[in-house]
Length: 475
Image (cartoon, rainbow, N blue to C red; front, side, top):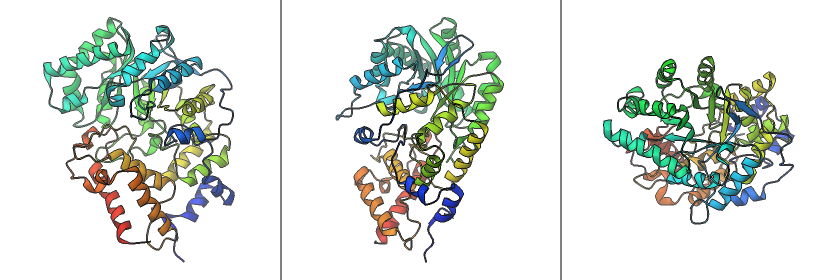
């Protein structure tokens, strides 16, 4: 009898470790309450079961040293709803923002590159319909691509200052509540950081803008090399960081450093603890790892559902992120109303995880490491590919098949035929043939742009090799 293997652990062993039996395995196939960022499209979101989606109490808030009362749920304006033409659906954005504000959400995070450069415009239109005192705006100095293109010194300074002023115009405001040096830690590490902000004098400009009140809080968002994070924290007494944005979730708490590609990323436990030591509030990005913690392997769904049948899969991740007291706000890219409503239920009010529940999630994370997903958050920073490859689309399809148990480990798998057909048919449907992984030339223009530090050509080669193996061996 053929073994049922998945990356070194067979199905029966995993089910035993996961603590699910026949009933749990049945639950694993269910799509009940998968949670935020799970839905592939609006049709899926609209057809999902809707139990009681009304919050049971008031929003949970965290208060800063300056007296800002910030909602623990922050609205990430990176994945906004679009219409059939692929343009931002402003009417729906307005409805979502109105609903969020009415239910206590007051922190809205955007950036110049989001939504192909149009997120700040949409955010400004939606928020400016409300009193300025009713919300906090976070946006960023996203000058990393300028620096990568070769700009330095005065040229980089002028272009970055213009970006900052343009953000204010688009957001229809004369001050920014939370302003970040965006995406620090990548490329060459400290030399690249200094090129972007220190050698050209931008850090002094930002400090003066804070003194003038046009920036109320100054911080940075971190991805990548730990020496950059440590260096910036070493400047805390000189600069005084008001907040720092980090990636934190129950998988990255202990597994980030072992789960990355060409540049080592840093475990969230270390990042959070170093900030907490200095009393610096954390703003959390990627609590769901780009949706991957709401679209987990069926066996993990069963494990979570067995523990809390009525809770969404996503709610576990959001409760985890909010449990830590120095977390100021947890960002979520809520594309559909169902995303927003589910998160509101989780945070209105927040019920922090207890020690036993934290252990349960850490054990779950250990189990999830058995599955070889690509650590893509679908941020699309790698795009456009000069050769037209749909990099995030390829990774999303592959990860979906892994999480649903539709990756065949060998031709002798009893489910090989079915897995082969589903993968290949789904691949052709989700990614046009001319945009698939086999067209990658290895130019590697994408990897330096990836906040997750992926060696993208290497990952594409692995997926292409898997596709070719399926094509060679019929079902």
